Image 1 (tube, rainbow, N blue to C red):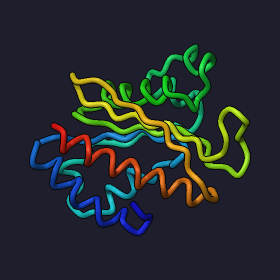
Image 2: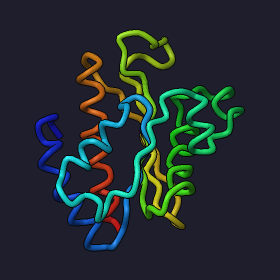
Image 3: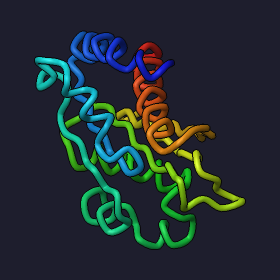
Image 4: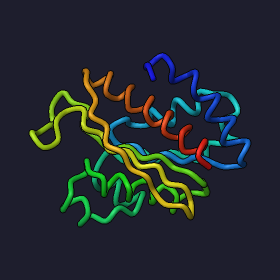
Length: 164
């Protein structure tokens, strides 16, 4: 999905959530609230968007989402385990039925050989049905990586809803 497609997919996401009577929560690190902003750009989003957590620091992940600090210490903030815990935490701390969580390295610094710039872990949780995680390896500058993450999150939410 191209960056310009973000605004085109939010109405589809809204319709799918409203059709099911579901609310969405977001838990964002590397995108700093951009997924929530894309969702709430649409008028009437309060019918299907419940809340967003911007948990940029490790402490925020722990305090707001209940992510275990030991989990972060063992696996790093940018990991499958933390993305899973963030998605679960967003559900646990909201009335939402579905959540999306993203944690990654948008750059230009902060990357390593094991986790280069553009590494993003995403988790999508559906209440009482578990969490699905995915690893994104994105290219581009900071703005591009963040925009691609938003696009992928919206697409993954739509795909998850289509399966339910």
